[in-house]
Each structure stands twice: as C-alpha cells, then as structure tokens.
Length: 105
Image (cartoon, rainbow, N blue to C red; front, side, top):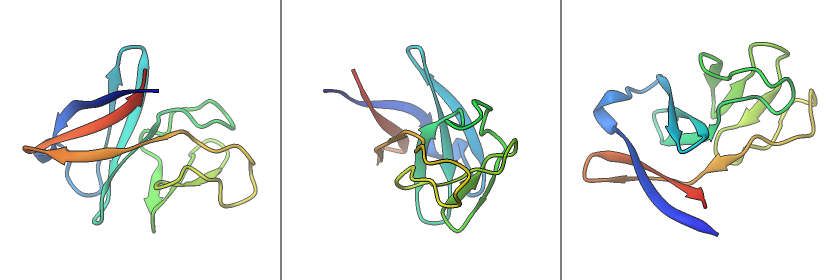
C-alpha cells in the first residue's frame, strides 16, 4: 500500500553528482542525482548497516564505503557478490520543481 508521492526537496538543491538524506516520518532515504535521474534508496547498506551517504556512485551503481557492496540505483539489486540482499528503492518524480518520493504507508 502506498501513501502517495511526498515532496522532499527542491530539485535545484541537489546538483548532479550530489547526495542528500531526507526523512519521511521515521524513514531516512538517500537521494542520488545522476545525469539521467534522481534515485531514492534506503540510506543504510543492507549488508553492513552503514550509511551510504557519500558512497561512490558510477554508471548507475552505488558502492558501500564499509565493505564494498554494490547496488543498482534504479532497482536496488546487488551487483558484485558481496551480498545477496537488495537495498530498498522508492519511485521518484519531479513535480513543479520539487523531487517527490513515493513511500509505502
């Protein structure tokens, strides 16, 4: 079940290559802006429970700085064998200059 899209940040406040953590209720979500899209994923790595903020992002993949687990930003799927666990992802959209995230209720 979905709570719908929630505005979280003005797009101009997140430049290409930047990351920011936003909070919706008790949930922390990491925004990553690439040339192609704004992605929203859980802010903690499911393998090591370390923050992903500041992690290296390249070619649509984020790499956990603690143990090197890598995940596709678009799907959350692991890609390098460090873990079989996916990181949760959230649909995003742009609306009137705002980044909006769809979160489950």
